[in-house]
Amino acid sequence: MAEDQTTAQRPDNAGGGKAIRPALALLGALAAGEKPSAALPGAVAVELVHDFSLLHDDVIDDDRMRRHRPTAWTVFGVPSALLAGDALVALATAVITEVPGEPGRRAGVLLSDALQRLMSGQTDDLAFETRMDVTFADYLDMAGGKTAALLSCSCSIGATLAGGSEWLVLGLAEVGERLGLAFQLVDDLLAMWGEPATTGKPVLSDLRARKKSAPIACTLEARGPAVDRLREYLASTGPVDDETLRDLAPVVEAAGRRRVEDEAARQLAAAEQTLTDLSLPPAADAQLRTMARYITRRDR
Image (tube, rainbow, N blue to C red; front, side, top):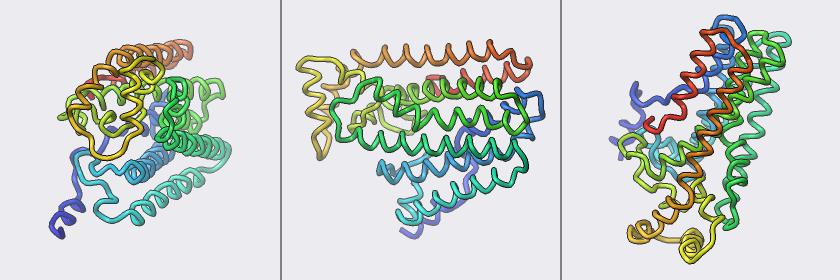
């Protein structure tokens, strides 16, 4: 056991995450016509908040692996993992409050709003565990808080720190909101039908975990004996047998996969249209579009 803990604590340069949120913050400054370095406090803050949310999510979801390594709570215990998450969000707030003047104040408001929405989304996600009436619209509202809020903040906080106009900040917030929803929808598709070598999770992992992900929420809106069997399974407890998963997987795929794919594509198209409307400097526009397509790739 001691050997496993030592291994888990060893610094590792591999699998450190995609750094999507800080990258978006830096590009926000570029969109405002300033150097990306103007957004460094915002980039640091949104990544700290993201890591805080992961530490807490792993405890809430009982996840034992993160980025192909044991999760913090499995190595150090639940109290230490939660306290580490709390420390990260406190540090994120401190980083932003150190920025002087009106840009710092506005950035602090953005971060505070994102945190409140994130907590609300996480609360809704927890409530889904005992609900059998979750709709796709409910899911999108939840994902808007749990995932899209921080990506929206990431896109807009850099422009705010760089002194961008209110119109630019609002536009970039809209871009981040759309990308956040597309990102979460694609994540849910990958959690059902992605390659385990890429996702780090087994095929049908959300179905196995009885999670009301986007494809499953879509399926719950349908009717019929097959959907009734899905509801019974989601309401059950105890071990999951592979035969049940093989029986239910085609039901979810038929009712939910195409709808989720179409919604992810719609959100991406809306984000790209907003970028067009903003008429950003060419370098910022090109890099934000590259990020948008990367975020919504099916093989990431």
